[in-house]
Image 1 (cartoon, one colour):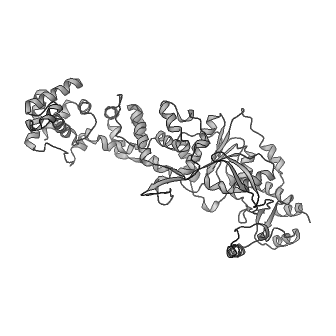
Image 2 (cartoon, rainbow, N blue to C red; image 1 turned 180 degrees about the vertical axis):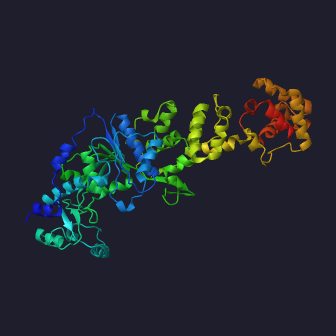
Image 3 (cartoon, rainbow, N blue to C red; image 1 turned 30 degrees about the vertical axis):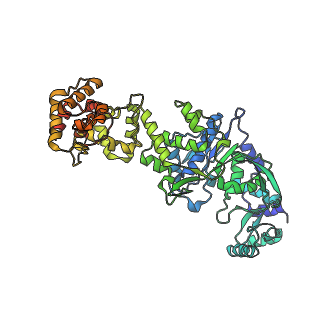
Length: 549
């Protein structure tokens, strides 16, 4: 019997050859320099922030070069697949406005290089595996779980490198006849790749982030097809899919760097060009005095859904991740604040190569404040309403009451050279504006009076101001001038310099008077510009609130 006979016994249903598939998936007709990238998540739950960072980089590379960005769902580990996970993946991409050129969702397939779901490509993988069996570069392995555990234990005892390789590959040299007998007897088996590498030798490998590396050749006969479902492992699916789909750049976590020798040998076996690899750092978080890997189980911010639910603008999340993607992004964005992140040219050499990448929530908060500060009142109204419709019924109701009034509140200190930056997320908005609505203002919220706390004095200040000095048509300079006149009348210093020189001469100063008026209208000692608040509240509400003191 020959290897070809063995291949036909294992794969009697496979009639197409690898040449047939190479014709089905011809080289892409793209302009010179155009890159083909893919986001290849496993549908095993939420979208992890690390996976999203790789997706973002894939997207930027493709857009930088007028290339192709596609989504491929890697569902070969079907035990871990979560219902609706593919929908979640597409929802996240849609939220961040990342539209792939090619993808598959339900019955919809966009692109000529699909299927884009790995479990639907089973026959393609098996045709390639059949070819390897035919040429003697793959074989059935009947090692049981117990045998593999015994092997590992024996290797550990003598302090040998663990793994299925060389003299430890027990079924590597099993005769074809013996293999056929075991198959016909119904023994379970996997298919292993037969390595020709020498672990003692090293080869040159160019990692796009770390530069030139010298890695040991692969000598492991690793599994390329599982026994339970006939689907490939990640290593083999990566070879077949990225070769046939003509992927030029593979962006993935640095934990896959150790798998490079396997992938290099696989691509070389089929004489396919190796894609360029960008191994991105692990996402870390500050936890007290230590930095640790962000955890799916411990940290809600590991999930991209967290940022949407928390009300961060999508632009802020993108900006924060781009500062991780390239060390020079922040400076570029400062120089070109009006440009879109897709105008930035990504350079993998300017990515952290060691030690992981710290994702700082405080930095995200600062970016988010800046993004919200730059929005027009119309943009912020639309974005916050869209968010509130999904996540905050109270804010939704507030906006729907009177959208124009809501926008006038948002516009306080917005159209200025130094716009307000006190709002971090859409979830913060209601906490910053509740006092502008009478029903919320009238709830049992205590007044935050500061220096002046005597009730009679507070009422006297408010009464004199409303009777003699308040006029709704005053401009800001006139308004503040009248407050200073009020100070002089009541024995408070209208000039801070004079107050600091002789504080004992005065009952207080203009800041104290302003605080009384501010707290009387908002119940808060710190708010955005008081004049603008009063302009939005209007004369009727102002008089009503002063009367309640």
